[in-house]
Image (cartoon, rainbow, N blue to C red):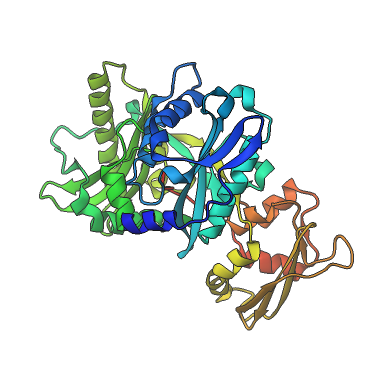
Length: 453
């Protein structure tokens, strides 16, 4: 698998790189010999307190080491200053992966580790790298790009915040579920290993079942995440199996250690088991793990654990008021450069949503006006026959109007049509049939994406 990925990379178009940007600056693809210098650069750029962020440095080394399922040195763009001995002054990378929309898989490119030395900012260097990365992502057939990032910035490059990122319920140790005097634990934890991959795959599917958008994990990715990321990397995964005292698997969770405490980011139990009971056990287990961590690092015990499981994970119901109130999620920036192609890809989902709905067996053309572009969805007896375009005779012509990239929020279940109408006065359906159809095709639904890092 990794050999095939390496061969694919070798055959990719270099997209005109290396490229002379003028004033001694050169844009090029990364090379294996860049790893240490680039890791140091990224650790410095992402520092918030003047101290290098070594977790970013270790992440960079992991991505460039050559055993990542999709990413290697040549997936980094680097701008160097030849007037200063080839000093790296700006960089980012592309992490390819597969996500799914209600079960329909599609390729995604994740630009990450975007950083520029302060004296080289506001010169358009990031924009030029994004152009190259977007072209490479398109060449791989990826229908979407997604990035985590600072407020507003990535809107400059065609992105919109349109998918939940995170969402937390904190758990304070004072709320730990205590065993009764005559009770003993009937569950235990152990670190997951590569022999657990089939079970982890089954449990991960349960974890993702309530999420509109999720990542598709293949065996190669499981193997990498279980064995290959550095323990100090910002994206290091710690997977645990929850089992009974006979060794029978009950569930799993994935967690990460942060200065603020341990964070559970994936969690599921097999059918036939009580999530409430598992959750009560988990509160005790997380406290034990946190105490062991604090002792090993000679640091004070973090005040809480957190369940970073989006807005609607069932553990929130299972533990109820033992958890603190919801900390609202941030958001992924999303870019869908060919919207009609993406809609065609998820066509079977849209057809399924019509089945049994008030718009069942619908025939007609839905004209969506994005002001600067336009799209039509042609249905015939509940089947999506065509995704095309039209030319409006006047600015506001169409069945529904969506300014800028706001339609992405509806498409990805991030906001309802009503929510969007409240936020954007120039977003509205022009007729009631369109409103009902849009609500049927694009209902709000939470997402929790465990993206490949």
